[in-house]
Image (cartoon, rainbow, N blue to C red; front, side, top):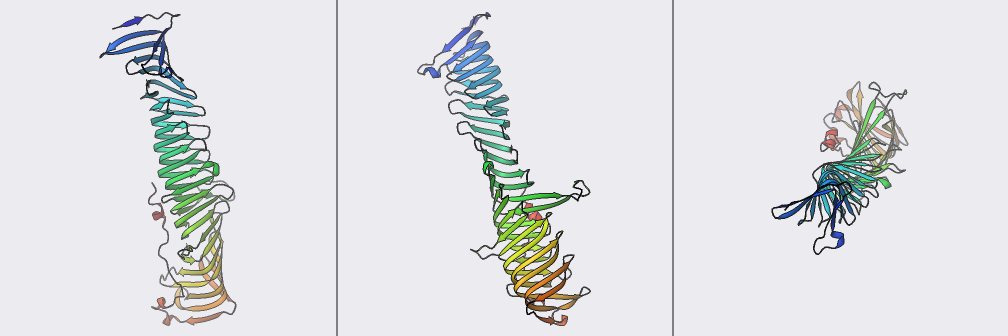
Length: 462
């Protein structure tokens, strides 16, 4: 069977197909300039040409040509396809509309507009009843505050939620997130990212890696779990403030832990917990909890009271333990350090590795100049063992006790020791020390071997 109607400029051919048992809202109406009817494999097919308008309920479709499959209640859409329902508009060159399911699909590049959002993709489908969509191949979504790209994306319009998969990147005014999969909530801009996560922040020049990220922009808060690593690169220049290859200095802070929280509000703080490892230049630490105040340039670590595990710090060849440690940074280098309660300091001689200077006390203050240690003061019940040298030759050791010990350094080497408050000192000549260094240790002496190494902290980062 073949039906042909010639196009007449003032003649508009209207076809209304009513599917048995369906309501009026399920009726597809097709309007066009001309129609050709066919019967293929026992099925009636109608081809509608020029100025085609298809409606079903609130769905309105326009295109250059439509092929209507009567028994299947489907329509193939060809040329300048525009599909609308309420605030949704989809534009493509070719696609299908399925009347029974009230959905559309296309294997061609498409654009979707939804109020404040614009989406492009290589192909996709959209359900007008469920208001759900799926897109794939070079997906790009842009709204008023962010841009998201991915290999594929599920879109749930009613709850304004999106699930992006594969090579996901989302960029806003402050952050950029890279990951394998991401849940994005358009109302509040919250994101939940998983696998190979990387968060970069423009304001503080930080990069955070991890297996799982939850980012809440309205709260200026981020949570990273599954082996998070924070890297902050600070750049400083000379007094001319001209940054170039000659005067640029780079100091990198690396923090690794089990959990990392970032507060980018007035506190501008990071909280890292569980198996914390920190590395920055000559400084390193292992502890269970660290607070890093980025704006104030302050690091605070505290004892794990449940396990009675003290934080451990290393600075060059010196190891320090105590119940709490406060470090102040200046120009990206350590400026001051305060250690409180049960302080123990171990320093290794660079030429004689088995000779370890030791000091214990109640509290410690260290002062630095341009990152170089100048002076350390230890207060309260001070006990110490210091090896002595004469022109770098071994010359015995001294054991002492006092209420205050002040150590003066030059080029990070101990130059002078001053004792205050009923000092008591005893000297052991070299002949009684050589080969017996292990006999000269203070109570609670523990040289730790787990100093963080840069390659270990970064080995799981892609």
